[in-house]
Image 1 (cartoon, rainbow, N blue to C red):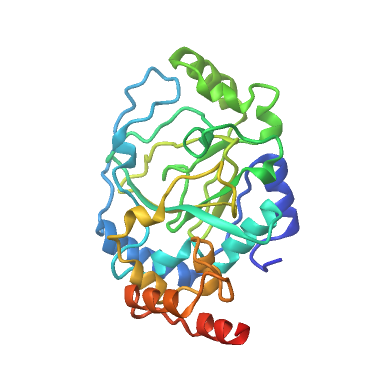
Image 2: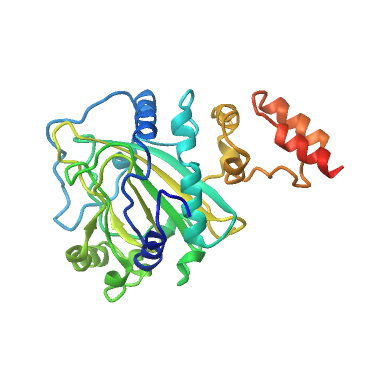
Length: 308
């Protein structure tokens, strides 16, 4: 168990569907990631006033502007941001939560929100619809562990995620109720809203949650408000029922910078065979080195020699 989280927090994640863990990342890690957010999105500040919600008081709606400053890793020259979703302590949390030794990172995105850039208010919903073609299991360890990581201080004025713990939402509606039309979604939001809790916390906090947890985005109302967040989604390795990002599809991104700095354990979370795997031969090692000249393949070569 990592010193950054406790067995009780793992139990809370499994029971409630989500748990807030403050001070997960160190101040030094937070500062490095904040600097990279500035490189990617610019050192912009939010407006003095939020955009006024145009929905009829039923919890907002989804629209493209909410996701304008959302992009997947890796980013050129942003080494801290590129690897923070693969932090060893995050991998350890996902392994403990899902009860497995091998996990796969199937989504990792940086998300910058600014007061006035959009109306970020959303209705309560579950995420499973765009993470699986089937349905969430009643065994939460067979679903996923999505981690919302905050890299700026998030108060109620900075758009924290709100959620309803599973023991409180289950008597109201099962996860599949998220599939309703506008009237049903509005009624679901009305019934869940009194039970909502906030994920507001200082920079360095994380909120791991499951794809069957009811949650919603909230608006930024703080003058000049900024919210920097990274989402890192883990699943059991080999679980083909869950997916989001096909990493090779983004082969034009600067993967060489990530490979040059990642450990074998981190790369395994992206689907790279570990040292000693039969995939690695003299030929595949040579081809991988040609693709990523700065990748230190010494552990992979040593394992191949040891098996010869």
